[in-house]
Length: 317
Image (tube, rainbow, N blue to C red):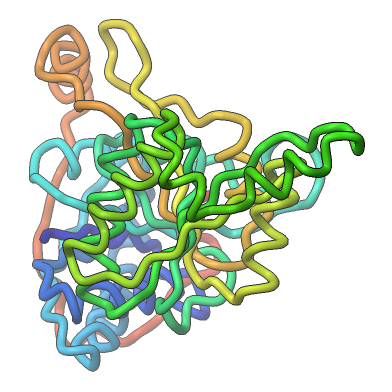
């Protein structure tokens, strides 16, 4: 596995780095720590901050490669993830408010939509990763998310809950609710939902992961966070779908956006379907690279002092 951790050196809690350590150490992942310089005077303190963060990763037993790029953050993260092959990108996601469509910094959502890899957001507490919850609609397009979740859970020794939420029927159909929440009966039913949930469960169990399937009724977002609160999950897995058209980017639906807005634990935004191959999208990316060439410098001075000026912009902002 290869992991990219994006940092601007301004997060006092170093959440992306600490989350990266929790994932990279047990998965034995090759890890890159990426910093982006927007203003020329920011490079020395950014390198110092990256070196300090690299030291924290080394305490997890992770030996990161340090890369510094110059340019606009979203474009440079996109270049890094297309020039090198990564399985996962970890970014910060600072909350800016609690109203409107977007509660976190705009770059958080832009990165999720722009880059080809799954994105792990360092939201809320990032202290343990032992209980994952996967929001599943019971369809096969989530298979890629299940595969990635299983790989991570097996390495971290985490359990997985597959949660499917159904609409609340009228009160006169209370018996139907009890029937649908009979998980064992659902998995044996032979229905499309039952077959798909069973296949997802078995896929995870083949990796040695402890799995529970749960069905709840009500508003999807409310039920997800009720489940997280009641059962103490420390990672939420949700999805994004590849948009149709020549330019490869991902659609983040209302549910995923709302989960990212409200989550107080890390969120893994997985990908569904196959990634777009090199085509017109690759052509436009190539044009951008020609007209706005980026500079990449690897490594950081070990003598640099850990510092971070307040004027440097937040990668997620």
